[in-house]
Image (cartoon, rainbow, N blue to C red; front, side):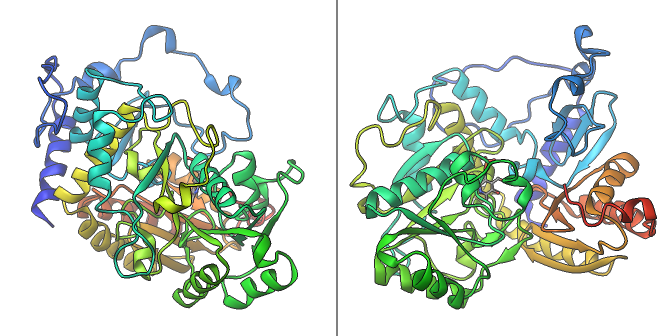
Length: 472
Ligand SMILES: Cc1ncc(COP(=O)(O)O)c(C=O)c1O
């Protein structure tokens, strides 16, 4: 294991083990880079005690039942690194990282320190009000090293940024930019793609019917490639949306929610070629697959076909709500005043977190750890009982569970109730394994043991079979 990673894990474990003092932070004289090693002694023990007014209160009675289907027996209270503790101090291994958000783990000390320092300077100075602020300057300067284009792929360097507060808002902004740039109405998207739950983002999503059910015709002018092939794109451009009416193609280079499906290199190359030929904007939604998740900074680097606009969120903010888009300046030139904007977009606190996130990914060689651990996890899970298939790109992993044996919801419930293991789903009946990038070999061993315990005991039960392959 790399030295940097060991250091992080040690820091995180030291903090978890330390239960005594709670020294106040000294406000640093300057805003910029926080100290490399931040070993503050969190008063973990005292935080286990719940405020009196919370005891006995059941929030479940005040939340709509529909959205609260996952792990609903857990009231999370605190978290650190790879673990979450509930209000009764039961410790869970978190293999979801907040659905791919906590790349650097829960409360990475370096990220937490950066956020605390930012709190002492400026919290909200959004992009829509101030042209910039110091932490935005610092972040963008660093982020430019990672953004697409300019690497011989034929796409101009992505040097222009709009920040948002979520992934859905990022994908919607990306399509708005494409529509303004081209003056065209239609969007082409991919079957099994997922781009968010807001009204328009939902319209371009086709990972599960449950995301759209009940919302008739959210927005028009959307056409789906029924499979990720050149022929499927041609069918649309010939029969449904003429090139001169097509503003953009939006897709995830590796689909997350839809089941960890990589769009084949040949298809991406063909889409790139068609987009260039007809001035159609190619948008990649890297909200889930980006910021290191798939073992390269962007998932599209796995195949080397670059986008015109790239949308990101989730892991870039290490848990702070930050999303955004980037692209070459020319795509943003036709935007009129007020066309884009967001009250919280690009706020200083989230950018401080993102700025620290880039440091951690780089300083701790997390891309190496992502690739190494992803492979170890997949190699072992592949041979477990009732696993019928596996797809792995870095730490974005889908393990298909035989639906004849158990609906995925049952596996997830057994995980949380019986093994203190937090899991998530994707596709039609698959586990989505998306832990933090800091995961160590010991965590992987624990995960394998616990998952094996769940799977080996799954039996065919009529009661569950009746649910078919119901997914969560
Ligand atoms: C690929 C992709 N795009 C967009 C979104 C929507 O992001 P958010 O929930 O932050 O709006 C998600 C969320 O899971 C996602 O996975």
